[in-house]
Structure formats: structure tokens, C-alpha cells
Image (cartoon, rainbow, N blue to C red; front, side, top):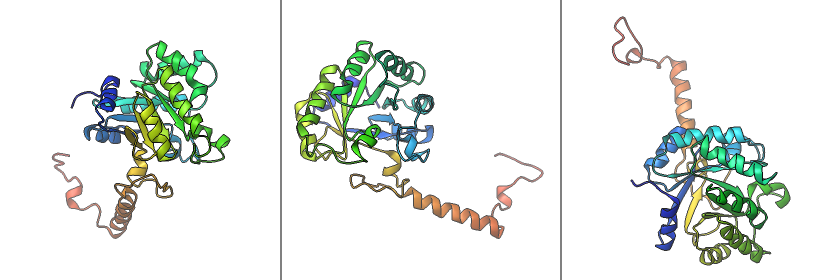
Length: 270
């Protein structure tokens, strides 16, 4: 498979070919996603919720994001790897924004970064792209704004023009793509038609240039979280639970390990 690049993603939009994206946080899943031909692997700050058990993404640190991004980029050869900039890594100053974003490329092997916000972070996006750090924008429902929004609530029902303006501002600032999260499908369709860069929807309907989901939601590994926009393609939670119960039963009954699963005087191969 050819390597996915920013120009190739933009070509997909021009050719009306859908873009696929998933999150990943570790090497085994990143490798599986890459081999499946997914276009983009986002190392998301959702790691705080799906791996760390936090109620939101705000506690995730730069060091944690660099650690997970380095792991993912090490095994990813086809997909474009995007590192998610965590809360307070780009809000303080332009200098810190460039420094932190640069660490994703220099230390962690990412090929781009993602940051949340529309017009209010356009200066950050422009500053990063000026130094050849590619930026994926993220507008609509922005999880780092959970307290301001009063929860994870659909955005754009009352102020669609503001979100449309956010999209146009981040494009003008130099973003190469935009994540559209938690907004009415009609608004996402308007945005997608109004910008020249790819849009990736998550809870934004079918009219975006592509779709992104959190890996653990797609695989059924977040059993207590069932947003309406997630299509669950597997139930690994149930499969894992069954396997754990069978292991417990086999150990307690003496059925595991058996003679073929141990070593005698001649250990032989592993």
C-alpha cells in the first residue's frame, strides 16, 4: 500500500473518495489498523478516557501523549499518524504551541498534530503551519471544552453560522483537514461543501469527506459508553470476558496447564 500523505488526502476530497480514520494508543492495535489500510491513525487524548479511566480528556499530559504517539508511529507504515495536542499544550502561548507540536514530530514520529477550537485558535494554526508543522483542526463538540459546554452536547443547532465561520477560519489559517464532531448532519454537509480541505466526521452525519471513530468504541471495548453515532463492529468486551471466565475455570479445575503446555526433561521448542 502507498503511504498516505497530506496531499493524497486532499486528492481524495477532490476525487470524492471517502477517507477513513481511527484512534490508536498502542502498537498491536496500531499495526492492525495500518494493515487494514486505514488512512489516518489519530493518537487521541481520548487515551485518558478509554485507557486511563478518566471522566474526560483534560488530565492527559504531553509526556503521556508523546509516549503513546511514539509507540504508534513506530509500527505504522501506511497511515498518516496524527498526534493529539492535550489540554494546555497550545493554549498558553504561541511559543509553547510550536515547541509542544514540534515534539510530536521530532520525538514521537507523528506527521501532523491535531488541536481543538475554531477561530479562537486560528493564530496557533497559522503559527504552526508557518514552521511546516501540519495541523488538523477540530471544531463543533470539542471535548476539552466539556465544562464550558456543560457536558458532551451537540453543537451548532442554535449557532450554525459560528461553526461554519470556525471551519473557514481554520482553513484560512492553514489546517489541512478538519474534524467535525457532534453537530447536525446538515451543518456538517454545509461545512464540507464550503471548504477545500477534507472533513472527518464523528457524530456529524454521512456527508463529510471521511469518518473517524474511537477504536475502543468500534470494537465494543467501552461497554458503558454507547453514543448514537457509534457503529459497533465487534463485541470484544464480551469475547474477552468469556475468555477470562474460561481461564479461571480451567485453572481451578486443573485443566490448565495440561502436559503439552509444560516442559519436561527435554523442553524442545517454545
